[in-house]
Length: 250
Ligand code: APR
Image (cartoon, rainbow, N blue to C red):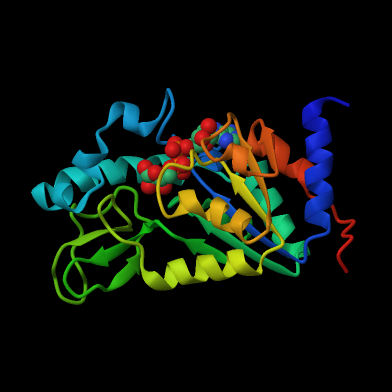
């Protein structure tokens, strides 16, 4: 049995024996669905400058330009389908006593593939938030009727309901994530470069509290040495091999 196969068998056993599992996903889990990641050769940040498109200053400097970029991303995501990695996580949730999925992704593919207990720490591409009254609406129109969209309640312009650089993540979202880490037996970290906080530190918090942490990525990340297992490969190919109905946890 090759090294990866051995690690997959080990990871499958650890997950089968876990009463409580937390999963953290990044852009890598959606890469096989055709959605560009942020870093690496084909990453979004190779073609665009985040400070020009994904910050509050960029938005107030040119709301229409920022919305045009998000419109372009909405068009890509609208055509994307969940891949076997997304569906494997939905199966895992259905079979696990206590399961939380924390995602940095804003594409909504985890909802489509069937996961339920989801914490979207960077928001959601399909929601528009009023810049004045804070009203949040779902908007799946591609293209959108007008850019920037207007709040139906107060008429002010709406912004994507996502977390930009230089913005903080709401405390209730952080608390919910840390509580899930505290309660878990095993943490899966999938398809994230582990650079952007606070997600980047979640695996360390799990290790500091004695949890088993299993990483799935195409390559090693800065935190890989901290983790119990790093499975190198595509999450869409590996995740379906980790799920088993023979739960040793009853
Ligand atoms: N399977 C597993 N891992 C993959 C795959 C795949 N098929 N394809 C790419 N990866 C890995 C890459 O090796 C990389 O480590 O996914 C990771 C993607 O890293 P990033 O592009 O940095 O995405 P992410 O970690 O989610 O970025 C975090 O940064 O720009 C902000 O808000 C944005 O939520 C994002 C945050």
